[in-house]
Amino acid sequence: MKQLIEKLSSKQLLESDEFNQLITTCLKCDNTFNHLRNKATLIVQEQFGFGIYTRGLIEISSYCRNNCYYCGLRRDNRNATRYRLNDDEILSCCIDGYQAGLRTFVLQGGEDAAFTDNRLVDLITQIHRHCPDVAITLSLGERSAESYQLLYNAGASRYLLRHEAANVSLYSQIHPSKMSHDNRISCIKSLLATGYQTGMGMMIGVPGQTIAHLIDDLLLMEQLQPHMIGIGTFIPHPDTPFGTHSAGDLRLSLIIIAIARLMHPYALIPATTALATLTPDGYLQGILSGANVVMPNITPNVARPHYEIYPGKEHSQSTITSTLSNLSQQLATIGYHINSSRGDYKKRN
Ligand code: SAH
Image 1 (cartoon, rainbow, N blue to C red):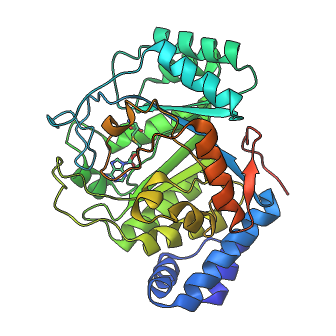
Image 2 (image 1 turned 90 degrees about the vertical axis):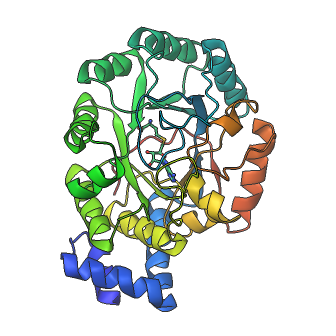
């Protein structure tokens, strides 16, 4: 197995059966699993040192026009409490975050028609006026190429749009027929072409997913070369069609994060909230598998419980400053610290 890990680390692509062998061995053999993770963290240390980038996550709307089978924000979930932050609320999250030292804000939400291009352009302009040197990341789902261009021109420089499933038939098993794999991928391509630092990714353990599907995901990302890679574990939400399925496997999630790191040494890879929801030291486990970004939630406390993509997300009432100091203390236990710069994607040597 060590040869396969070496092969990946030297930027050679594995054959599908080699990927499969590596993943299945890591699932059952602690030595191989640890070797893979060590290799992934060494690559991060070479490229980024021991600094972990932070991004302030602002969940701007829980309204969504889509009906994804896995997501608690899906349109048909009548038990969801819907909210939408107003521009002042979003701006004041940014200003508070800025004062606490954050230099990237991620505006994430369901696909909510209230966030028109004009409104977002205004909002992006306001954020830059108050917090001049920050990076603004959007994660607002599928929009037109024109919309992506307008928002980029206004000053948004990064966009997160997980592809969710590279395999077309898996994609259609986890989304209603109205949603199209083709459109998802063409959105990602248009984000890349516009010049965004673009994030892709998928959940681990979504119902129907096999290791072969995960290999398809790794190969699609190899082809499109995203700058950011978000890999989270599927967590069932009771008010969705997938509510009675079991959660994805944490170890498999860490294995795929580590493999993604070997394949993308310069990428920005978050230790996702889903990992932290599954286990108290989830962020640290993600970092010890090759992640180098954490996205503390800075959504106003009253709204937080209602952005329920999946249950069990932490809804701490803590201030941004105390969240960051907590994170720093946690990172220190494994020898890492917060790197408070913007953390743009750079190709390095
Ligand atoms: N509307 C935006 C943001 C979606 S929420 C968009 O379409 O990109 C961000 C991510 O949460 C999704 O891309 C999905 O991969 C993940 N997610 C949704 N439901 C989940 C669940 N039940 N368990 C784990 N992750 C989930």
